[in-house]
Image 1: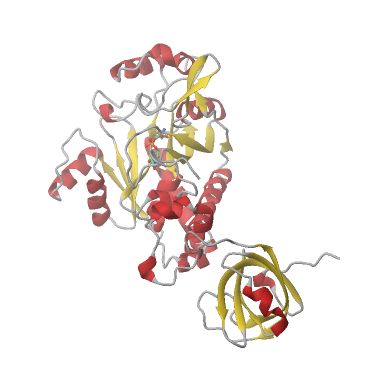
Image 2 (image 1 turned 90 degrees about the vertical axis):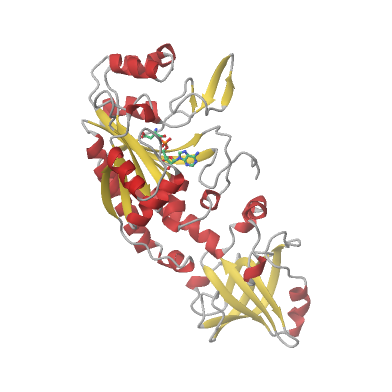
Length: 428
Ligand code: AMO
């Protein structure tokens, strides 16, 4: 009969059958120890029986094993062990898959031997076995889950948008070309145009999708493939959807606080529910200049500006709204000749989201495209969709990895991406 596996955090009394990884090995003369790790936790296993010493000697770190044993009471001091009150006295060890010499250590005890990020990413499947690295992705999973939950509660429909597109939505330079039979196509830079087309019929839509941007720069805040969490809503202006963004972020953070206590503790983090601050672009530039920024009116915010705003308003989602038309994409509604209905949201010292009210009038859309030196003929299907009864509408997008980075104070966005794609990295 097949042994019934029990998870580390579910062990009550013996005999037990456990499966997992060899987290640590300790070889004392008369007794041997294995720290065994599974998805639920880490437990100390003791080998006292001399007949098992040979099996023990074959073990290597990260080997996958199945062990049988008895449950004994214990008082374990090791901080990593999650079941401190018990240990397993092993009666049988099976090596399911023996690990070779590890290229990077999963347990880095000595702070001075921290492996650099590039090497860690080369061996990412090992790297994500580290408890702290794992914690990042448990929290990210909670973010995506609660994002969806927020919009489900608010009666939005989750849509799926195409990943292969015929024309750019976020400016003409940053596209990855794809050969699409005899036509030239591109990987989507955003679900932008399609979520709008859905919103003018469904009214309230949301999506979580991968996007690709062929920007050549290699920075700590950019990826060439990332995930966006978007919403789009009809009969809503820029301020209406900024309120949704504020409430959505607050909800996601409160759920992370509630459901990821262990992970936050591992990362030594305490998250506050942020307040919101609304500043117009003009107010923002004046405030920055007062605080020694060199950024002038009509220019985009520099990363240093985002840091200044963060110092002025910590634990705050800073909404910078009413940007100049020329600094926002063609699909953003011009409120007048100068000012647009576009906004950015900053959090944790970095832009995490941008959005705005959209152009729902075909003639204005054609004018905006031409102003940005784009050819309206390439957007015919998109423009024509607004000819059959299109309400005004607005929306935004949160970059998933960017938000993970901001929320957890990560130094590099790659830490918040399971398998990053950047200028140099296409594997693993
Ligand atoms: P934007 O281009 O500002 O807007 O992107 C939205 C959010 O996505 C994240 N982001 C990135 N994350 C990692 N690497 C990148 N290269 C990268 N580029 C963007 C950021 C950013 O705030 N269609 C509009 C949104 C809208 O108006 O609804 C758009 O894509 O967090």
